[in-house]
Length: 72
Image (cartoon, rainbow, N blue to C red; front, side, top):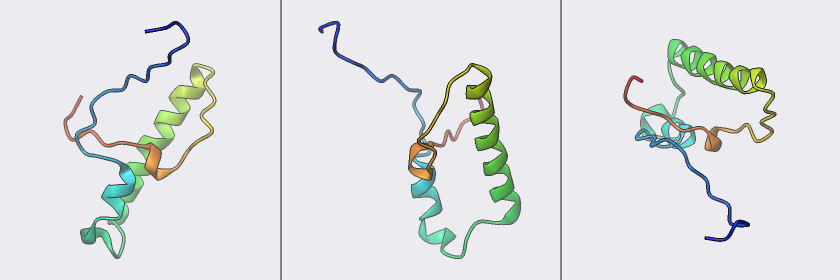
């Protein structure tokens, strides 16, 4: 590996992308309000955490977020 090569290392997210979850047949009419509120709170907390560490994340979209099915 050369010093100019870049690697991306992420945690394993066994739940797939948030986009695939939301586009699933079971959610054709949307997700329940309490689930939507939970997802939004989690996304907000994640972005807030990045900002606390002076990281600007400019690619916020459902395809960029992944779900973990286990409790960490």
